[in-house]
Figure 1 (cartoon, rainbow, N blue to C red):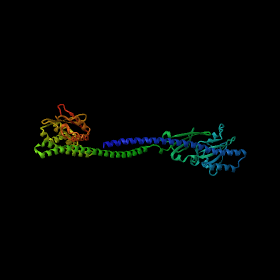
Figure 2 (cartoon, helix red, strand yellow):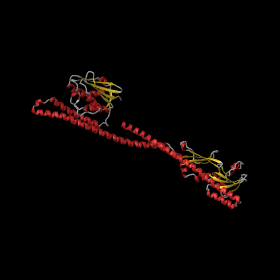
Figure 3 (cartoon, rainbow, N blue to C red):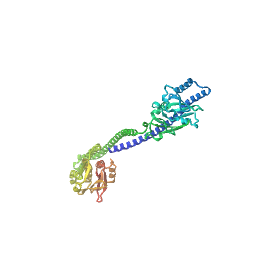
Figure 4 (spheres, rainbow, N blue to C red):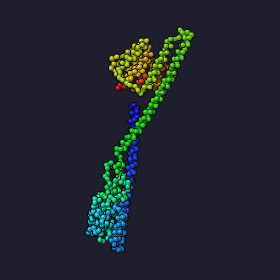
Length: 496
């Protein structure tokens, strides 16, 4: 489970990093796109803004040309007004203003109340002697009936300073030429640059709006200088949602990857167990065939002369096969229960007493003494699987020590702590374990063609089991030669 948890965490962090990197790249590209769109929209507004007034100016200039030839009748003048109103739906009406700033006439008479407003607010500027412009755009002002508009003034007679005030509503005016997608995806502020008076504002700039996506477009028009500020609406910007989507998607991808990893891990472990069982089978066939061949030879000798059969060797071979089968059972159980076994706390004295009781007959048969310190062992508490650790680790190591110890010698068990490990030592006075055997134990593999250890018959399963059970306890196994001769088997278990 720990390995799966580490894999999930690493995979999640990696996936989240990739998702956020992709999101940043997409966000950067999208901001660049929005910035480009805003730039294009700003240029379109300027172009259409200019074209709009040039159309009105062209009509007015045409009117002045007509006046230069003859005076227009009321009917002809109203036809001209109708043409302007028809071609420009945002125009509420046209007011004729004299040099004293008085509205001489309004058109259309019955519908022009909304176009009156404060038309005369800028007459001082209009009548300024230094003002030589024939066309002039006013700042925005309030119209009647709650509307906002501005005036586009056209000088009709140069000397008399008479003007036509074409009164335009800002709302209807901007709807004519601002693209539809601007209303859905962008906000806009259209204002006079110097006074900062706004002709149009569709929203406020949110703090979340990146400065790189705000486009400011300025342009002059006749006696005014205008500024257009365009930025994407808030819903187009990064909030917590990309993080939530990244978290959710990363969790889904990581979960799928973890499931795949778990399947692969189980598949790998199954193959590993199968290989171990195959190795177990090969070793079993090899070792049992040797002993059975020897037994068969002894039985053949019994036909000729029963007294010539070495009963001790025959018994040893039979005992070896029985021991081998017992070890195979443990190996099979161990292989099938690696993922499902429990640890509990036991004193070292309990474990040693269990083992010494089982081994008492073997110790007596060889007149061996087993020494240890009960008072010390009773205070040592180990977190182990009692059955596996007692019989498969301490039991196997003590059995090896008995098997290879000379008669009437001593086997001692000692304990100490070293680098946060419990260290249990089983010391015999035999001839010592070979370097080849130590190498095979550390590599957890046995050479099936090798005979037993220290010149005796042996399958080597005992030490293989010891190695595997200790690894399941997160410990390690070491062998050394003692100064007095013999072998020191050291079992290291983590202190928890």
